[in-house]
Length: 298
Ligand code: R5P
Image 1 (cartoon, rainbow, N blue to C red):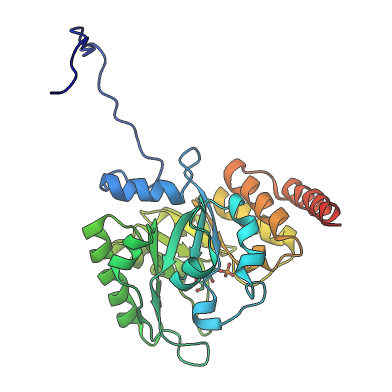
Image 2 (image 1 turned 90 degrees about the vertical axis):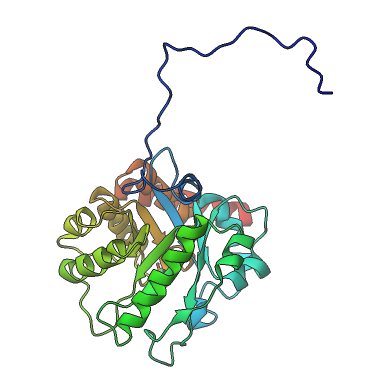
């Protein structure tokens, strides 16, 4: 028999206190199921509704990309500064400690290498495996205007259906082919299509003109892709522009792991994303931290 000796008869129903109904900090997510919102909370920091997602999935079509040759040496030490990690399941299982506290956004599409037509992707992950890895979200490339546009959209909608069944969010990644212009008109089209067809998060590039319209026209959070390596001040400025203009953070790869001081850079990006630190101040922070890290390593 259960031990009920001493159980108090006093009840504390507080009928005068309305039940709490907390809001949710992410755009478009307030009607999602609890499990999906809980997973999104492991990607986007609840206190700011933004994320510093570290993208290291490049090897799925590029092989051993500069800066990612040894993920155990270059990436694992900086993981404590990331809110989330975007990677393939191969790197996750082989090189990322299971004690890692960051949310994991697992790459779920693939197929062609950089030697072939990149838009010819298929889904490359079972939802069972995403659940087994305790993934916080799944990422799929969408090639609007690309040769295999419809197939890539179908990849995304299939993943969205599976994710909805089990409470795993899908991030649509707008992939821009060499022949397409990364302007607000194109990015607005691509991001809106991803959201309309069910992606709970969309990743896209920044554009100098009209990015505010891209984020405003997308009913779910947009995270900014970093793109090719830029000087650190430029990359911090771009991140600042993006979050000031409505992005819910960044999903940045080369501008962090190809930086001369990746640990300093990811911390500076974090200040920009979560505190809107002005870019020049964030760059000074980057330089200070880089010197400190170099001195400590000597
Ligand atoms: C590319 O398709 C991959 O998904 C990368 O994660 C993405 O390009 C972001 O990395 P980066 O900031 O280096 O562009």
